Image 1 (cartoon, rainbow, N blue to C red):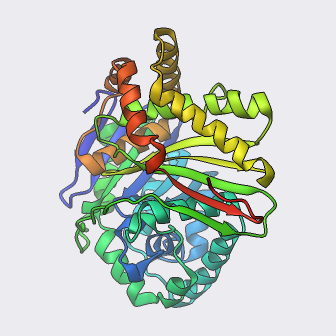
Image 2 (cartoon, rainbow, N blue to C red):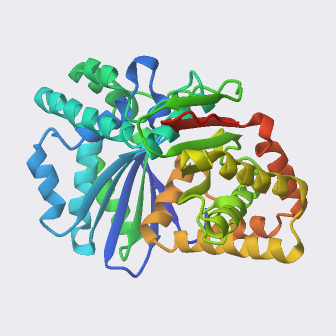
Length: 415
């Protein structure tokens, strides 16, 4: 365990991770090891649905009391669902730490899912699904996942479908909740100017003898991947395209080398090859970026772009040229050194937020029972060689292995 963190495991199996800071604000994230990949075919969208309904009532609170509890003291309460975790988040002044902790435990472990609230939330999320489909830049990513992970929960939209949502009722929601949202399947990450002893003592009192029920399910392995070439007509003016491939899981040895290669090609910096050599040099597209999403046991990598349909073939040819260059030409010593420093800086800055740092570490501990120190991550990046970059680019950026998902309203074709 890295020295900046202190850990505790309660008798009911829930984990607690603490990071002492000098901030008067205490950040708390209650994270459950359950996301959309843990749903059966009939449960698509259930994890996200449960997350919404956690705010609709507990054994001792109604919606108004939940929503006002931290607002009344200027705090923040939120939640989000991913493909592998569900996170409840609270930030308050140190003096209100216990108030926030008790609320997180209440909605996390004691929600009751009132029937009338469930019906309303179905309509809310249905509207959210329609908003996503109405945004081609969002919709194309959902389609990409569907083709990258066919017939697997990782390929499903986190929001689910309207048909599945309308099949949910109080009993099916409670069943999913009781089988997944229990202390033994959760970790709470806490940062702030508050002692570890007080944190443990407070949560110990809140949890009491509560054990919950259910069990952590074995996750389904991803199957074989076959590249797909898909064009879907839409009424939108621009073409929206994702090109990509399966990639490494978060714990695989080559993960950091791919993260570095992705950073060079089209990551978050403004000096990426895609940005400088296509967007800035030719002005052919506004949105052009590459992404890498590692999961616990697999991952996805790709490039997203939007452009005028008449420019699509030209943009694509230049994108493929940049991928080919990374596959065929090793980085020079200076190029590689700069790229490493850039990635290390980005990671360090991302970890500078106390809430983000402890949440990320808590997720790692929840999924893998250990946390990699930031210093070790930095050292591993320093050890990446030009040959390592060539290797991952020739495994992941290979054209014959890439799927291409195009949303376009004209006669454009994917080449």
